[in-house]
Length: 581
Ligand code: FES
Image (cartoon, rainbow, N blue to C red; front, side):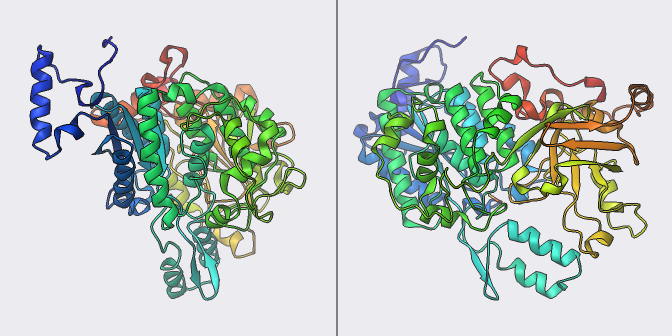
């Protein structure tokens, strides 16, 4: 166990030479080579975790934000030192960005812990970067504050307002249905993402930004500021100032991320009808603090939390409208009676003090509804349990067709993503509108590493007949910008021995949202026969990060973290190794 660090500034975390004075002398000598004055080098140090990358469009303006953070740190008497970490650009990564989230979390944690900083500003934004930074910061437990890059502005196409990426999917569905031709979809492609910043709707990035603020890890009022708005630069400067306050007070993530603040974050996630991915990420962040996110508790919260925010993909508006319409402050004020107000935040105020001191600004009631007149009386997400998902599954009921909430249907099974791609548009596919599409081997234990593939396309022959939605079930994830009657995160996943891998064509599956059930209506004997006939698991990767991933990945209810990175790894079982890739 390393001895507790008591030094500050550049004297923290000295390199090991067996002579501390020599190590300090050497460090200061090299630090002076960077051209800082002795006065600057004697100040408290604020690290700035920069995720700028030309493989990440959402982070295009990170350099401008980092410059503003530095301004804030210097004005508050500190020395800002920027350092790079891995950056995860959602659409630029293969096999899928979630595969790298834990790697980024490890990078962030170790660089915070290993370098001399009294506080850190985490500059992230795209889907996996914010959870990775929060996971790393909670584990390192050095005073930390999150700053996000902010959402994109919307674009226009032939008079229609477009924003990534709910509209991407809407237009792609129209293209698949034969309503749009190739040149037209090419035109749309150029209008969907027209500024720097994260996806413009209530996708995973927006959900995680609001969650980070609700947790207390981000400055009040900053989650929804658009990427290109001047307020975003001011938020960066103020985050630098706030980081210096944290450096002086010593308040750490462990003072902020508590069971009560995680519950607040869940309430907000439900009220914004946020991304299903955010459940997974919040479970991982909480797990780093030793807090278990119980899906049964999520259901209890969902029953008592109304949907207040009208944003795509479930509603009509975009993040820029939420910013103009009151931002998270408006949501928190409506939710106040349901929140734990004693939770501490990075400002040094409790949530209750924040809300007590916040002027009741303008609120656009078409974007943020009141509790007296909610969009929906219950939360946007619900967990299902049953013989098909013993450890749970997630349904974004706010994005689903209520006609399918109580439904029993015939399974049409795709054994893998490759099988799905090969057959979904086959004119001879035996499928009807009331069938249930099942995708296997797309969970965290599969070679596919849980991609956002749970939004299975409607088979082309049904799409052409006008079918817009069907019940779809998988162990995969779904983009927060997508919508439809889609059951995700089935756990245990099929590649890890879960019953999802035993489903066969023509089986009956029953879903009951009212009962919170997801059941495979097949007898135990038959399932045992099928289990015994499963082929052996493919050989696990033998080297590198892929090997680590395959050996340590946890199921969705644990946030797909690596077991050895959670606070209490001995309390968590890994999946059945014989079935894992
Ligand atoms: Fe980065 Fe959507 S691609 S937030």
